[in-house]
Image (cartoon, rainbow over the protein chains, first blue to last red):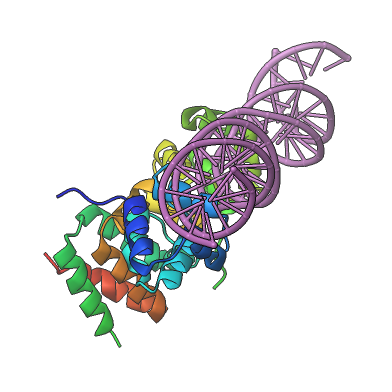
Length: 114
Length: 114
DNA sequence: TATTGAGTTGACTAACAACTCAACATAGTC
DNA sequence: GACTATGTTGAGTTGTTAGTCAACTCAATA
């Protein structure tokens, strides 16, 4: 089950919406040539923040591209490293190597926490 | 409840073991002057990888200093961004702004998952 | 008092991330 | 066949991270 690259997916999404690289770049706030390189996988995926803006500009959920980018927003990093308990959790999680199903279970447990 | 700084704790741990900065630095693989600056909080805590080496050199669990460093190993980052489900979890967690107690609860739920 | 061991400090740097800028190619259209 | 819209490429830029190097201080000891 090959995973599609960030670039290929971005190109596909952008074309689906019928948006030009320049227009997308303008609404995201980057140079259009950067978009080109990203789409052709010449560069690493953009920062989490830029990816989020891209998703917003294209009207797709952030997660679509974020999960392919392998990046975490600085905000997110702060959330996860702000307390010892959070870091302990991270370690436990790393040691367990959760499956997707387990992640989902954990998310629902999380929501029941309040 | 003031939290001790990374530097202060490192200095304390190192002295407890009776190790000189130069010796610690040598076994970690950094310049000894770097250790000095870290201990006096002149620089930000080292990378997660270096912190782990420091803990190993001093014979204390990684978590002791890692939790104060506010950093996440690249390995950890991979764990957290490797799947869409994990990323969904991260978003849910960010939105909730968990307390320490809640993190601990979540960790115990995590352990009961298997 | 010279030397040795330990720690501190300022200035500098290498590597990387996340881009920009300018030039060019290519296809359609007036 | 010039003009326009779109995309690609190479080289360079900016900021940050994670340190290094050389010079110094201070205390103990031979």
